[in-house]
Image 1 (cartoon, rainbow, N blue to C red):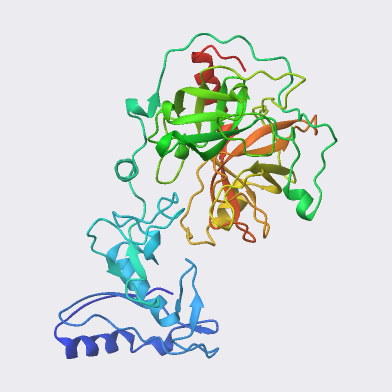
Image 2: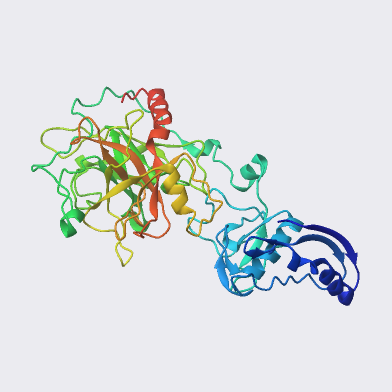
Length: 445
């Protein structure tokens, strides 16, 4: 039941008396077992702020008992009622401070929450809400940001330098070796425990190691990618942002050992062009994909462990399907693994994934963008730091021993937590852009 009161009180004592009058009929207003716990009123009072006392309801729940309210805040009933008033007066929503952006709007796309920035560079006036373990832990943040404000606070990368181009010749059709076919000498299965973690040579013949030039002319492992055409690598855009093609070397050999540049020139290529998705968002990682165009193609033969990974078929249904992710992600000491690791993860549909993410620090207002898909949510199994750009590989429904590229490792909330899946760039959503960019360069797929 909602009651609106309009009154004017002046002075601290008068304000207290005014509020007592407003609440004097509370005990007469009941709905079922619960007394009225929300009284919203409009008052113009000089002096101290308003204090609301809701007492106990008939079930004996105390004012200061901490509970979880609908929007995910852990606060007392009394604080919840006071926050209702703050929200009405301020036309805002009480959320944790890290769920509010630099323009005082609720974050719905995950900006700054994927990797939380605890300190803002802007001097921002915040409206505190009641509750929390320290001042301003919970603040009142605006909702329904306009399209203009969204663009200005998280600009899409559309400037000319976002696509770095180098002239190149026409490339003939790719080799006739079917995409998505593993090139192992044995029949690979997913085992348990340690066997599940370590693949064999040729199991993922399309996974690419991208190295970045470091000081002294040496190269350091930067990220992974997937060979989707003899001359094209698909990877995560956030690893390519701000870099030139000349900064990298690409190594493909289908082997599980991380092979560094200089070991075998036949397995190395330079980058001729980096094509970044025109609607990539660096804050929330929407459309987190980039195409690496190589200076020379890799050729799959019977003698090597190289092959390409298929793009996803149209209208594929992955409910109940488990997919694979593999890469050279960092170990516990922060160094890249020298041997590739793999893990099998369940597909998580969009609505389920969004619901699970809303239980994390992303909050109840988080909206999972259509350019993402999800997998995982099983304890101890996940892609993690250093695996960015690696492919999520799913079996073709009609050919279970053949794989297609469903996702690109992008971001997550922690690693390997129960009921917290990982977010992947959705290659099915990106496929049209990929094909158009390749067609423009006369690269057939």
